[in-house]
Image (cartoon, rainbow, N blue to C red; front, side, top):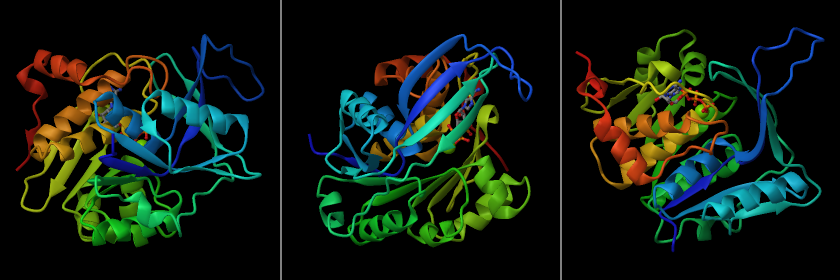
Length: 309
Ligand SMILES: Nc1ncnc2c1ncn2[C@@H]1O[C@H](COP(=O)(O)OP(=O)(O)OP(=O)(O)O)[C@@H](O)[C@H]1O
Ligand SMILES: [Mg+2]
């Protein structure tokens, strides 16, 4: 099936371990369980969409190492089209060590890898007629900007997962329609802990909607002509929050494809992210569409979005 969504960005191999307590410096800690699984913001958002039944394709790069082979295999197993996933010669893949504590908090140590996507010649083929949404994370800034500019010309909607504000990130922002950023990105952007002020500033770049995700505190969204929306996180007794943001983005893009009002999209995205947190690994517990629907219908009225002001 031709892809409706193309993701251009990071794909990694995650090595995850559950630990009771973090060790002091120079100490050891035994891992209760260990899991090796594909990860990365764009890649895991695409896996989410695929589980929800959306045809998707991944553009990015892996190294010519065993990690790269595992990353590709993991995506193919999830029905993610990897035609545009390049393998760079003599380069390394992105890898992350993730430690998860008894409360579901995760610490990530990651290696960027040296594989870097280059799309100068292949770019026009990337956004084929079927593609409605381009999902980016902006780590590889030049190809992201080139793809986002092309998307604008072809009326393809662009979504950015802003995890960390890096030098040059602002150059990408004018080409983004839906900006969904982490608390860290918002803090870096505005210089203080003030998601609402960050959103106001970010809206100045032209996005129709800007959301800041705030972990277990939920998310805050604002858009042109909309009152601010606070979507609480669903209480699930999280085992592992690795990839909650990535899966939230997958759910958000799903809502865009359905042309849902923002409130419904945010509630759906929060449900996807909460369900993901039920098990170790960024992808293990990503839900199917019937699972999200039955979860949402089981929730009480308190979980409907709070419209502020
Ligand atoms: N403990 C939790 N329980 C339920 N839902 C959660 C929890 N943590 C996060 N979420 C959901 O996931 C969304 C995104 O989480 P978060 O803000 O941590 O993303 P992030 O900072 O991009 O993290 P990452 O990219 O590492 O996954 C939140 O808005 C919330 O809906
Ligand atoms: Mg994130």
